[in-house]
Length: 429
Image (cartoon, rainbow, N blue to C red; front, side, top):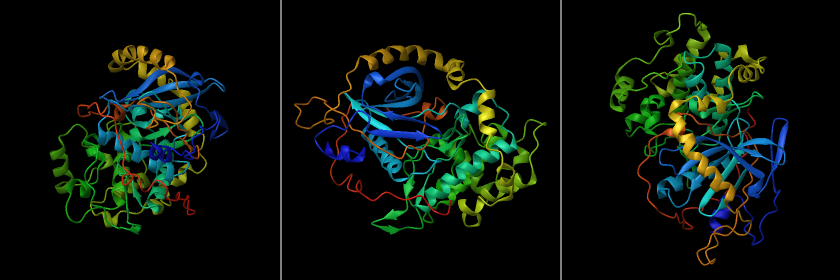
């Protein structure tokens, strides 16, 4: 399993990394992630896949009392395609490093489960915020701040020839320090083929069915014209409407009807979706949305160009908006507990928390193929420690196919690109 060691950032040496090998910093807070299971106290389940193969817990890192999110992936009860997607996302998180993009701070394996540790965002996702607190939408200055930070992430992603393909409120995270990060690169596609840049993408498989309301019409159409990174700009426009009104247009409609409406009907307009008569939005915001939702992708501005839009002038000195927001709402854990749909899930997770505390997280080589079939070891992955998180919102509860009991294996061809040089942050940002 040396290939997996390379993926998770190990050196490939037989000796395990030291217990405090990974340094994680975000804003003014920092801690040293360790391999010692006793250093992570499970507090509460905050996210789960419908299949049960992926779950996310809020944990307390005992040495510093810092809160972290720990994503647990079962290696025995996950479909091979889902496992490949998990590994591919870890590759992207290793390559794409930016303050407004999630990153993994630490990884290790205990028995047949992969654990991915990342900072905990106390605000959760914007999707959770809309679902539980601001059901009629957010104020314009707050929307502008969230969209500006998201655009910075997209501008960086696009400058490195990737398309995110899943921009929506539930994938925008925030915390009490004002940090905002775009998560979920599991559906992203690369515009590099055999070392050459491609200007059109034709990968239509792998998109999330739940994300159809946010998906650009040219992606849904799946024709020979393909699509490019302007598809993310369209999704950002739908996200802007979602943040302003509390719900994305087309939400709840059958995918086929959504496709027809997007191809044949007019683009959604803010004034047609406002339900709260007290909500007021500027002309610059409406113009911003119209630019993003232009049916012709060639007429949509790039992410970098949109950062200069007059709509964002109002947030240049409003860095305190997010901290004030977090202080005014209940903690994420309380918001999750108040959700009746989570009651049974949280109760059932208590036994899982006990099992985690009883496990032995070993620190020798991970899943050694010559270890007589025993799982013995850990890997220590290191990224740059930028914001990352997972939260218990609708994106963690998406439908999944039945899970096969299959232990994933890899070939050298599948992971030949793991030693590719890391991409550098775009200087234009």
